[in-house]
Length: 223
Image 1 (cartoon, rainbow, N blue to C red):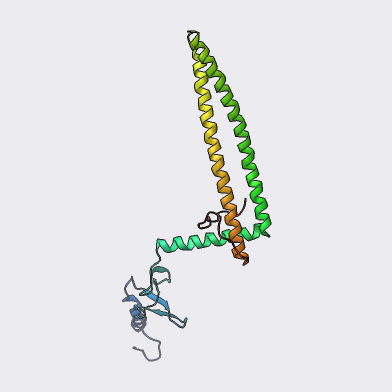
Image 2 (image 1 turned 90 degrees about the horizontal axis):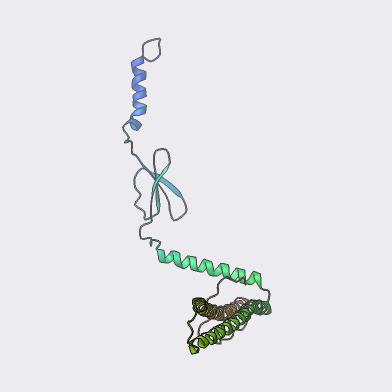
């Protein structure tokens, strides 16, 4: 650096010194990246060159912002099947927790089953009563139709329409009764599954399912 006697550094020498300090940064490319990774001992490393270790790496820009992540070499990628398995296991764990928090002993499960079945049986009794009335009404209509036919009289359109509507009502009630029977069977199977799973979680002796096969899957533990 050039100095004049009795004076400080010259303007030119100051400019040159500043340029020398800025040179390493000024010549660095605008897209320079920093690699961050953690070794097997848990130590964090930073480097401007890509590491050779087969570690998971995070690429940062000059401001320290994450640009992208590079997975560890040889790591098995997560698949949709893995997600489904984890989701299934998590759902089963939640169901078990709900089962144990809802029922204290096996008798409570049976009481809940009986209450649920009682509701379905009440629906069944009501549907059966309605079906009996619809069938009686249909029989009266058929008798009236037969009377018109035997007497050679023209059958009124209103009577024909009444029979069509009554037939539809009978079919609808029979369909509802079939759904009711299926609901009762599902209720019994569901609470049987609750009981078997409850015994398993409590470490109690379990008996094989009465259907001779596997126990039904436990759904929501709450009745």
